[in-house]
Structure formats: C-alpha cells, structure tokens
Length: 155
View 1 (tube, helix red, strand yellow):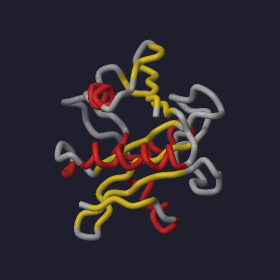
View 2 (cartoon, helix red, strand yellow):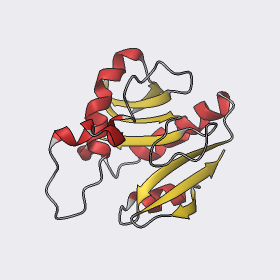
View 3 (cartoon, rainbow, N blue to C red):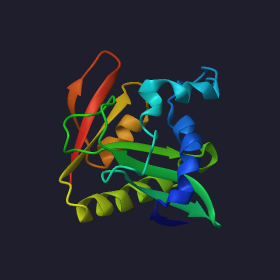
View 4 (cartoon, helix red, strand yellow):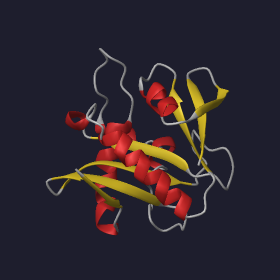
C-alpha cells in the first residue's frame, strides 16, 4: 500500500468514496447510491478542490485507489468553526480492517500540520464502530447530539 496527496484526477472518485463513507448499521440494507446527493451529504465533495482548505490523502494498492481521507471547512455535521477542517474518510469495503484507514489518517495529520492547522473535527454516529477508531487516533468527544458525536483531534 502507498499513500499520496489527492490529485484533481481523483476528484471523480470522491462520489464512490462518499457512498462508502455512509454508515449502515449491521443488518440494515445498503441505501440507494442517490443518498450521497442529499445536500447535507454532497457538501463533503461538491466542488472539491476549489477551496484552499480542501486537502486529502489517497491510499493505493497495486496502483488502484482503495481509500481516501479528506478535509474541508464547510457548514456540515462536524463543523465547529471556520478555521478547523472537518474530516471525511472512506475505504472500499474489502480493504477495511487491514490498517489502511490508520495509515491514511496518519498521513493526513502530517499534511494538515504542514498546512498550519492545529486541529481537525468530525461527526460520527454513536453506534458506528468508527467512533472507537477515531478515539484510538486521539479524537476526543467535545459534544454529543441525539445520534452522533462531534469529535476533535489536536494536531
């Protein structure tokens, strides 16, 4: 596996990665792919790359993109202010649980530090096992809503 900065040629892949970022509780059917076009979801990739705060890392295996972690400063679920980029991360299902996500995140943290950021935020549903993953990476819960946590990691 290799990781690299996201390129403009990767932007079309973000729709696929956004779909795989949607949490589906165990036993629930997969949603229609149209779920990503809800304005509250699509904001995570809409016009990605035109803002100076848009940044990301792509994981590849054998030259094939298998995951991406990206940040934006947008008025979305995990937004806490206009200086803290919000995280989105996604892996193709068959690459989960093999360390790809952790490697993506570590490289993203380096990129964010290089860009001068001091923290990053995210929103995660309480019943999503990824909440524990984020805590292992140093994210802390700063607020709790009915169904989700807002988490922040100091860089």
